[in-house]
Image (cartoon, rainbow, N blue to C red; front, side, top):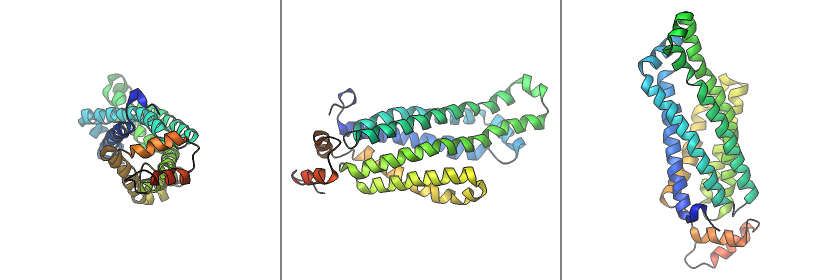
Length: 259
């Protein structure tokens, strides 16, 4: 039942909520806002936008790095919290998170290519302007494929978290259901975009809503309420192999607890 650095389960849960909030805000800034603002279909305009707003573009890359960094302690904290539910599944979730994060972090490197191409006299003097602008635009196109690849692993990660939430008894089951739907939405979007990108464009609004409801609800709940410590300790005492029914039944014996 020992937690990371001796922290209580509730403190760990709220720390996870804070990290999740940083992850969401930084991810929206890097991927949702700056990329949509600077990258347009026309390579010449994109190159101009990057050169004109270089600091903004660099800030988005740093924010994206922050996203990948927060994934690591989040994976560790989630394992610590959910190993009392199912140790093997919690460990599998860690692996999905770390593989996805490694792919995501590796993809950030190519995002520095426009800065190198457009900011180096060696490249600007050696290549025609149109060719240079097209090459600078390419990382933006590849980032969409990179996103599809790592969100496959994140989709399975979120499904694992959803199942662990649903069976935990110390966090709301409704959030577990929302997270599972969110994970499935990621998988549908990723595979559809890889196989039929023109059709996948129409799925974007339907993919964003489950992410907002599932991950947003989990983030806020962890940040504000934490978790039910007594039920967490009960699951830890019973062991990961304890059934949901026996855990719920034991929870009824705790005064003031409502199932």
